[in-house]
Length: 449
Image (cartoon, rainbow, N blue to C red; front, side, top):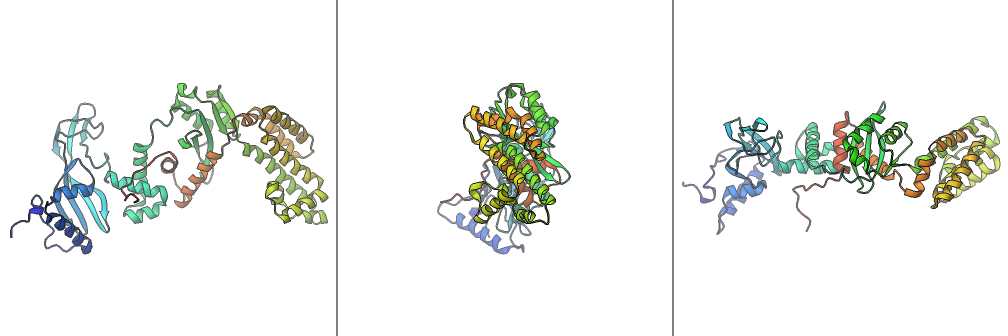
């Protein structure tokens, strides 16, 4: 029997073979035959090339091996290209046959097979030639890696391994490659206002330092540890010219960060996060409550303090009826604790002012009151606020907080939690860039109608 015209350019090695997933194979063959029996028959090479989605290749052979479809392909360009720099170079000595995993059809896995040549590049030396369907050194096609990275953005790596049929470590390696080529190289350009914070990714004080652009609302830099040297590495990468363009830096009151910013950015305004400042008063209030509870435990006044913690720490407009009654009991029975509560609320009111001179006056009055309050935790908090007074007051002018940085840290915490933790910083940093670095992926999925 003569060869049918719809497969005239490709052998038919699947005849007589028993394959796993026979229904997928039969459906695929039916698709090819239907396309070939139309009035304007489509060549199988054209159909496969469109199915693969790579325009710069030619299909030379098709074979079914087990339940897999192996498509023999070659690049369409005549002169090979260097795998390192992408420039044309003379090629020689075809290597061994390699396979690249492509997106499948249901349970049918598709592989692209080709024997890449070596090229003598005048710039890079002897290298393996570049292929148009995959990155250098990868055994997966561009579209396969794009879909894996998209799935890693929206779900955990265990589900990605089940959906794509690859290992856990392969998912991490693909994410790192996609981030390396898709992360915006100009993300450090035009920085004016940045936020700095640390993130604890593992027990025993394992931290990351993250830097966020307030204007573009994305993470622009991350590195292990939270010391002054870590932040200085960011300023080294930024360069003196771009450092001089920074106008405002928001952070908490960590000594290492303050030291690095003051040394490398003398002209930038440091803004201490408002909610870290208020936390100083909240922690001092809670410490006073615990001290009072220890001193009067077992008395009638001590019983009034039980279950008063949230009534003291919550905002007044969020109190329930029961918490309001508990606050009244504290006011009636424990003057030191109620004085601590008033100090906490007064500090919050001072930071609410919009005029700098009013906020400055209110803060100075608060410092005087806290220093003579005879409450050691508030005396200590007042000493800390007085030491960082200018950076705290700068919040009134800038109205910037570290809220966006804390939000990204919460997202990073969710990423680490759904992965059940990371053993080393590089995979976590890659996931941080993938999900919070402004990377927009274009996975090979149907567009919504």
